[in-house]
Length: 92
Image 1: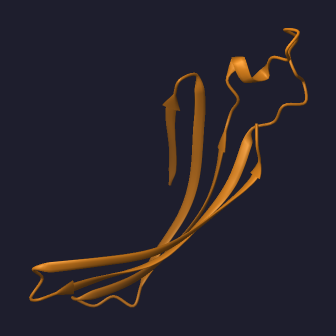
Image 2: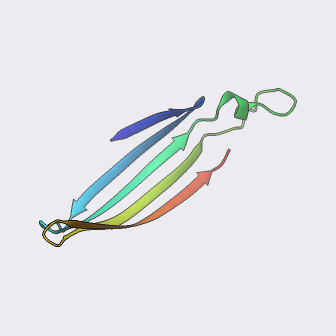
């Protein structure tokens, strides 16, 4: 799955893998992992004196998630719980 979203003049890209396992009618457990990056905007590529910074690189990061979903009280109540970890490798 690929996702991109425009925000201002920067673009954000995300590739994600997802899997659901141990599923029943009333519970499911899942895990996902993804890698994303954000291209610098034109303003972020400029040095204070106005020259273009040739060494600037996109922001990059990895995200991980594990979670569960439970349907309780004859599917009247749904409970979700998740843990996230986001590791940013490069910053603008």
